Length: 320
Image (tube, rainbow, N blue to C red; front, side, top):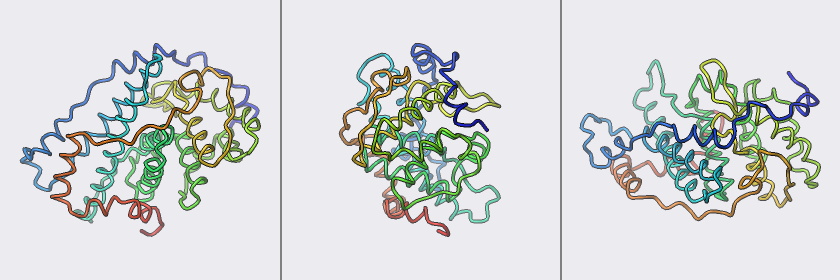
């Protein structure tokens, strides 16, 4: 394990992709269809005898839309509204998945392979970006939802046990410290990055300048963790190679705690990601989402109670 001095001396990875390269990657992303959700809404999914929710529609479409919003930002164009629309789909998709995981385990209590399809690292990114956009309530909910998915073992087994997303563990641990009423027993990988351990010690430091060396080191580290994943090597920021998501998330938590944030002179922190954006208006569900909610409420009257903040917080408690 590298020590703190080693992390500080990393510098910017020469293989760190340029903004133009990241935009090209995003443009090459395969589109995703909302056909499942549309069929669900119109009840033309005749084989769906158990009224399974359209869990494979909103998340992947929202994820791709968030990529397009990132491309706008990297091209110097207004991006916040597009990102808010993308997050609306991702947040809703995670609610659907969380509910259906619970229903699956009640319907099939003795199933040899209980459903484990929630992507905890992408959920963490969604939480962090919600906070970045100034959606405090939505970010808080998503933080608890991600912890509940982990505690209930709804997360993708391979992703959690083998990919070792240390940057995502950092963001969830920051959330834990900020809230004070939720925690997770993390595997060893979560504690292996010295710079992150340092940030966890310093993030509430009143003097913003005291954070600068560690934050610069974290920015350098981000550039080393910004390459696409392969079948054997996984990087913390493969989804956000030029977006300082972990830094802006920390900034938002500090701002919510009444603390001043430092200004960082680092290529990762170039505009528009050199500061927190203005808080965005609440997301308004579109017709497709409203149609899905209509059927969900008809088929599953307990949906709202099962995904309420109180129920999700209860699901983060051991033994629940």
